[in-house]
Structure formats: structure tokens, C-alpha cells
Image: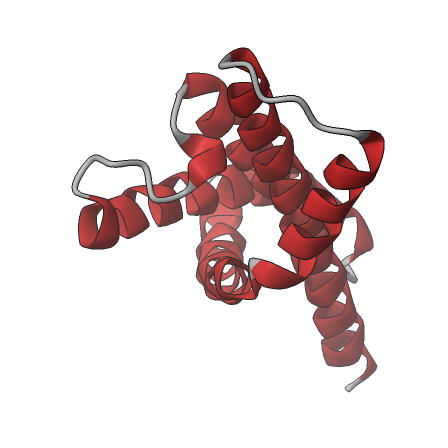
Length: 145
């Protein structure tokens, strides 16, 4: 029973780290793109933008939770088969989950328009995947063995 609780706590922490870093990367990408076309932001406006996105992207956070749950379950099985890759199974699964999530969201909602504002180019997509990689790495470190 204790192992299940520790795994659940590790998962929750991984989801929170993935979501917070994804929201921060998202916000930074949007601010950078708007600044590139001449918009200017005060420090207060930037801070407000970050805090509102941390709470306002909750639907993205919910889908991240589902994506990571599926990805980590798959990684648990794959790492038993491909034992040399076991140390990187969860970080790679986290990154892949976010990449697939972005593709699915775009295919259902975007029509190529870039629904996820912080993931409209290669750097933005890479940062979102890096958020999943961070969450997967944290899950790998925190989960019980």
C-alpha cells in the first residue's frame, strides 16, 4: 500500500512540474513573439501574464495529466523489455506524451493554426516536450523501486 501511495505522490509531483514548466515556457514564447512584433511589456504585465496562465491553462494541465498517466504506464512495460533503456524510459515517455498531446490538440482544434500559442514553432514545441522530459525524469527519481 505504501508503494502505491509513493508512486501516486511521485506522479502528482511530476504532473505539477510538467504543467508549471509547460505554462512558463508557453508564456515566455508568447511574450517573445509579441515582443518581436513591437509589443512592450512592463515587468508587472509579464508577471500578471505568467500568473494568469498558470491558473488559466488548467485544461491543458488536465490533458497533460492524462497523457503522462498513459505514457508512464507504457514506459513501465517498455523498460522491462528494453532494459538498457530503462534509465531514460520515463523522461522519454514524458517528452513523447507532450509531443503527441500537441499533435492531437492541433489536429482536433487547430487545423494548422497553432492552438497552443507557445508551441507554434520548433522551439516552442521543443520546450513543451522538455517540460514533459523534466516531469518524466522527476517521476523516475521519486517513484519507489
